[in-house]
Length: 112
Length: 357
Image 1 (cartoon, rainbow over the protein chains, first blue to last red):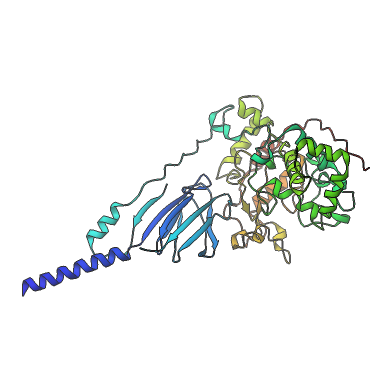
Image 2 (image 1 turned 180 degrees about the vertical axis):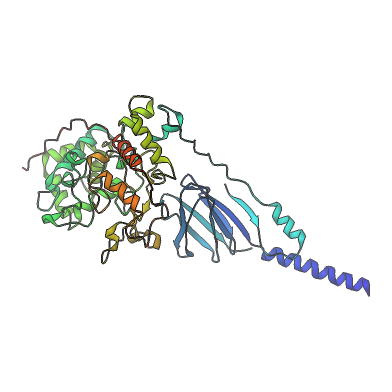
């Protein structure tokens, strides 16, 4: 009986582990430094998030007007950060409204 | 640099630990050098500008292109009534602006904004008060075509330029084998504007190492300019051209008008951009009063007084705008510094224009 319980528990444990892995989402960090995003392009999976971190001594903003994801994270100072989850697959242009030369692309791919 | 961290809710410590192991690569972008207020110091070299603004590959600067662009820039026949040239609003006599609070256009129509200074605009990443044009080539035709401004039918203008023997010759020299059209017209005008450069002010000479180029008061003013707890000017008026090529609502009184000018919002409909306008250069500012996009400040002192006030309409102030709290001495020092940013204008030779045949 004990053996059966142990095997059952092991099965549940293992199942939950793989379910968790299958559902895992990632949070990617992208900096804003010297009036540039620290990467020009990033590939992520649907459901992942990006946390934008301002490393400059003045405010930055993050927004996108792309069809696949429209958002405006407002503005935040040095050391501040804002996170956004990407729920749809597609290519998304991300900019800083204050400094329009700051641009990057987020490529959101379907989960395998 | 990016760093990646797994943060999904997990049910086992194992997963948590695995995820946490993937934490963090720190950003390794170069840290800006701390400013040292000493003539010629390496930390200051970021402020220097070349003698000519950079040009795109398909419109490199040549003498013939500059000369053609200069003629076009000063030719009033580029307007519908044949009485307004680009130089009407961007005149060398007014620091490449017009000395007016708001510009006058076609048939003396009052325009909504001040004529922007075009000195050093070739160094900027984005053009116009609202940034609706990216390059000087993109920008060039707009004011000619605009009913409120020069109001000319562009095909008629191209016909004039093509049938005028002298202009046809100048175009052929500047752009051999290329058609006279909007493209070459815009390119020539852009090329001329790239030569309008202010880069040899007393401040520039001090940056290059001339200890006597700035007074002690002007150096103190530079410190006020740079200090985030004092003027905090450098947050937006950044090196090398004293602009961040960015957009800010400064809380000007005109933002409280009925149907105010929303500025950058027309291009980027985000709340932050309502009433935001492009940061202008501070170079040659002494030559081009009045100031702000609405011409509401008559003097540099009035500009600083506005910042001291913390803004008039505060409903959508730029987060980078902070109320300055400067002493009278610091205000004087800051003005003295701003005065040091003017390059002594050289004599400017006006072009002779092709006669109408």
